[in-house]
Image 1 (cartoon, rainbow, N blue to C red):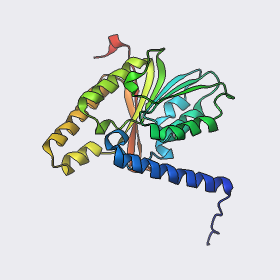
Image 2: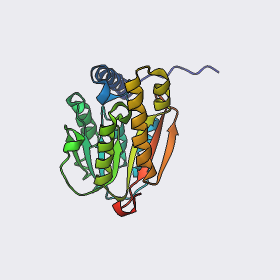
Image 3: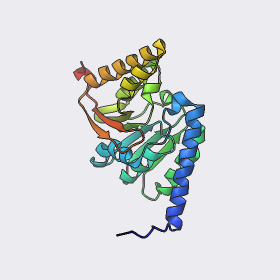
Image 4: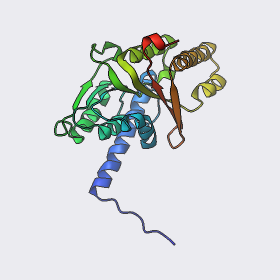
Length: 234
């Protein structure tokens, strides 16, 4: 049986155009700022669902930080989960992405839903001190950074989470193994291996679990790390 072609209505067409524009913008920033952007395409909806799963399962009110929001794929999923009394701080260092994040905020009608949502166009390391977060959701491309910076970022997130809070971040499946084989520059291979060691040491200090998301480009793994009190860490 042949199915009739689906005819896009005005809402579907606008959504498709918006998604295509997001891909074009993301790709342009990938080419211009590879280390900070870290991916050739925005994360997909399946990865967004996987990375926000702990947030979706938790009752409010909740304090949430999003780090490295990009075009707002994770932002959209986070805002869907929030309810009255929740707070969201979004950090994105690249000003080119800010209009997309503002659009996500407006479409979510956060004021009408009594959600505090603030967008910060700055380095995450410049985040002002404040109450600890219940959830930190990161889109930062850790595998593109120097190992010292990865250590600094993970320590910052660890310190900004309350005990029992959850840090969620993702990595592309087998990315370090593939780079170790395909990259011929010895210093770059050493950097990749050092980043892997930093992430492994961080995971070893906390309870964690992972969800593989094969329907992403590229396939990815979402990692969820439960923060322990400082006295309980090895």
